[in-house]
Image (cartoon, rainbow, N blue to C red):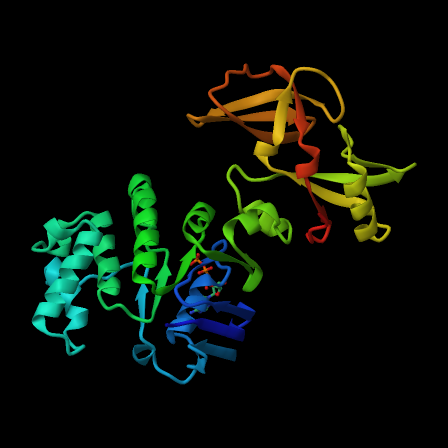
Length: 363
Ligand SMILES: Nc1ncnc2c1ncn2[C@@H]1O[C@H](COP(=O)(O)OP(=O)(O)OP(=O)(O)O)[C@@H](O)[C@H]1O
């Protein structure tokens, strides 16, 4: 049993506020992901939990007890870093068994644990080799194994899959997620890769500039981003954005983007009107999968020109140009369009997101 909580944690390096008044609670057995761009404070947050950095302000709690003054090795935490350092002179077996040797376990128990973890990670056939005889991906799995054998209260993982090739990374994501659920060990995982976060997390905390911008389950963040940053960071291809002026005339509600206008459903229009407090400039977002290509002009259809086609296999991304704007449209199937071809697109009007100029979500 282990939950981890940060209460108003701040960490400064000179003038840089690396972690800015961060609070969150990770529940027992949860897979919690810290997601954000480079420099957003993820690693520093993880190092504070591990006890490798002292916060300037705030408290870290494990199982409800403040651990600020408890040294790293007494926190019962295992950390896997991006740059895994294996002992080069030891075999894989020894690398895996070494962390267990001072734990007072019998030789049989150590052997059992090493073999079980090796099997889980598909590295049983490598146990007699030295790290230099392993590929990068194999080394990364040994490093993970070394953390897993200990069965600590909490796993802290900092981009542990970053050195793997794309195929192995996708494979390891699923393995790691499954393993975390089987072992039931509370895990805090750092990544800048939104797909990794979406596929692995029970909950995600999105960080930017040292602050937590939103915490939620993957689909909560995807469907109801709290602000422009989260909306743009989660989803691939990313959400399309454009500036517009919101107009309410005679019980009709329009988004005027200059090159085109969109008529909103009255219910949505009224909500926007209420939340905007007399301002009219907004940023509109629409996900690529929420734009249709249609064949007849009608309400909310927009003329566009095909700019480029990106085949993905089961889906096709069609980049279209409207004035100076490029929109990405994600369609099912293998579609063929010519560059320069004129098409009609129609945003699914009830799926649009509207943000204040400050970035705050209106709807
Ligand atoms: N030891 C340090 N000394 C000075 N500044 C630091 C130190 N460690 C981190 N920083 C700064 O704190 C900020 C947050 O860094 P941190 O490594 O936590 O970000 P991150 O989100 O993990 O980034 P990345 O994904 O690139 O690892 C950055 O501006 C970084 O330059």
